[in-house]
Amino acid sequence: MLLEENMFAYLKKELKKFQKVLRTNNPECFESQGKSEGVFDGEEEEQRRSRREAFLKITLDFLRTMKQDELADSLRNKFLAAMGQPKLKSNLKKKFEFVFEGIAKAGNQTVLNQIYTELYITEGETAEANKDHEVIQIEKASLKPDTPEITIRCEDIFKASPGRDKPTRTVITKGGAGIGKTVLTQKFTLDWAEGKANQDIQFIFPFSFKELNVLKERKYSLVDLVHYFFPEFEKPGVWRFEESQVLLIFDGLDECRLPLDFHKTEILTDVTESTSV
Figure 1 (cartoon, one colour):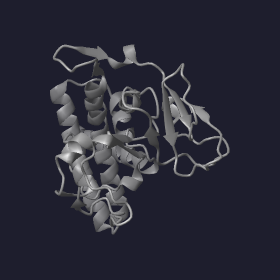
Figure 2 (cartoon, rainbow, N blue to C red):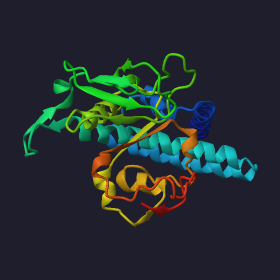
Figure 3 (cartoon, one colour):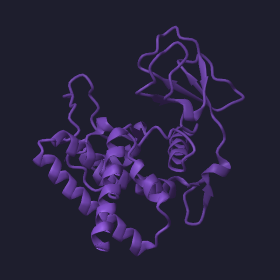
Figure 4 (cartoon, rainbow, N blue to C red):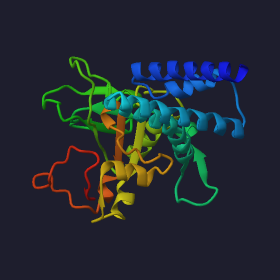
C-alpha cells in the first residue's frame, strides 16, 4: 500500500536523522536538516514539528524498553536544544540589535552594529591605559602576575592564549564606568545570534545583576533561572549542560545587591539544585 510505503519511508528517514544527531554534539543538526527539506509555511512547519515530536516519543519509549536510558536522555536533550536555540538566537538578536544613546527614550534607538567601535582589549593588568583608545582589561583566573599585556579582539576572548593549550573558561572584564563593558557583552552576544562568530557555542544566556536583584532571597536552580529569564526554552528537565557548549554572561557587577561572600558560600555543582539567589 502507498500509505504503508510512505510511513516506512518517513520512519526510516527520521531514524537516520536521530542517529546522526546522536553522533554529533551540535543541536543545530535537527534544524539544518529541516532546512534542507524545503521552506514551509507556519501551519506546515507546525505539523512537521508535531510529527517529529510524536516520533521522538515513540523512539524514546523503545530506547527505554531496551534499557538504553542514557541514549534516550541524550537524544531528548539534543532535541530540546535544537528546538530552543533558533528561538533564543532570534530573541537575543531583537534584544541587542538596538542600543540607546544617551538617555533612554522611546524612538531614540541606534543600530548597535552601526555605532560599535572596536575596543582596545588587553589580557592582564595594565599599569597605564593607552590614552588614544578605550581600554578594557580582561583578567583571567589562570593568568600569572608577570604575564605580558596581550591585545585581544572581542570575538576571541575565550580562545586559547599563546602558550596555553586549553581555551579560557572564565573571563572577568574590568574598566572604568562607561568605557563599554556592557556594550562589549551585547556585541559578543549579537554576533553569535547573527551567526557571525563563536558558533561552536550552542547557547549564550546573558543575565544582568539589575534583573537578578529582583529575585533576591528567592530559591532557584541554574536551570530554573534559565527558564525564568528565557521562557522561549521548554523547561529542560533532564537536560544536561555538560552536553552543550554554554556561555553564561553576568553583566553589571557594580549594580549587584546580592550577598557575594565567596569564602563562606556553599559551592553547588548540580545545575538542577536550588539555592537562594
